Length: 420
Image (cartoon, rainbow, N blue to C red; front, side):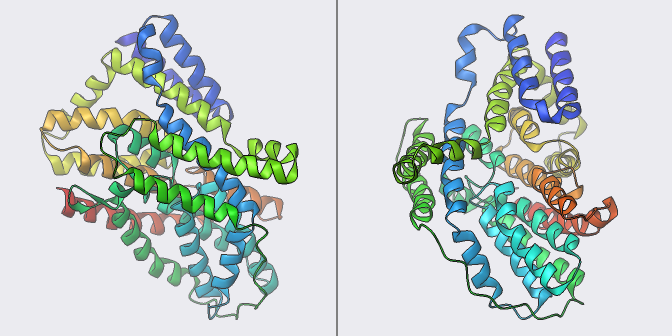
């Protein structure tokens, strides 16, 4: 077990130090587990969850076409036309970013909404830093709300065999969707207090024109078909992945037929290959440490640390995940912790759903504590820097800390009351 644990810790350290090359680190680590015989050859392919990878790839292709169609920009313009002043415009944009991020990747959501926030700031000559920070943290908020909202949600869905509707209602109880939504509503007063003095009128403008409605239908089709698949008993394990991939390929084929091979290149560039490769490597790494008994040892340590108290382990898991995700990528963290949570649940003789939902809540929202905790935050800071604005840590945390703690606390209490 010691060699497997040593490689795992080194892998994490290198992914932190070499964040741009984390996929290469994960793949190299996976190769090392295989080469050393820690993971037997017969367990390599079964370790890789191709359903998750297909879901991500197909959804990414559909989302790239959706953004290109200008539909999100039109929705944002219509939304702003119904706001009274800058304060409520920022709140509305943040909520809109949250709703979009429940179905679209967080960074893509930020790239959709950020230009609107910048345009308002420039027209009214107000600082864009707090506006874009608010949009960024909101983009991270609702990724845990649905099966396709974030990579971490897809990881949980694949691992725990949850379908699209299970995020809304599971085993006769409210799902994690409601914990996230109540947390999102609780952040409205936080944003209002931050921008309460911004009473400038929002400039009116003609809503952007939509170039193509088909990508919107495509994205809606993914959601509808995933819902329908929820009702199929004993469906094949790759069903959700094939649905997302089939619609992603349909959209790609249509784009190529209309615009030529250049459309294919553009869509391929929009797919996050780094994340797909990272996940493939991590699946093998986690299978390796599971095979070596590392996961069982970590789970047993958590049980001992909590002294057998479900409340203690739940609290430790939620707020520990918030803290870890504030500084490290939540994808490898969640991928590692899901099997640990299973071991903990078995050790405590409990249903793991409470801890699964607690893990996802803490890990998804925790990235908002710091500027480096989530890709959307880093992207927002990059956009501002290119515009000539520097974001100080205290500027970010002035919004990120109260926003995160409010959303996490509401979700934490809701999940405990429903699933304890």
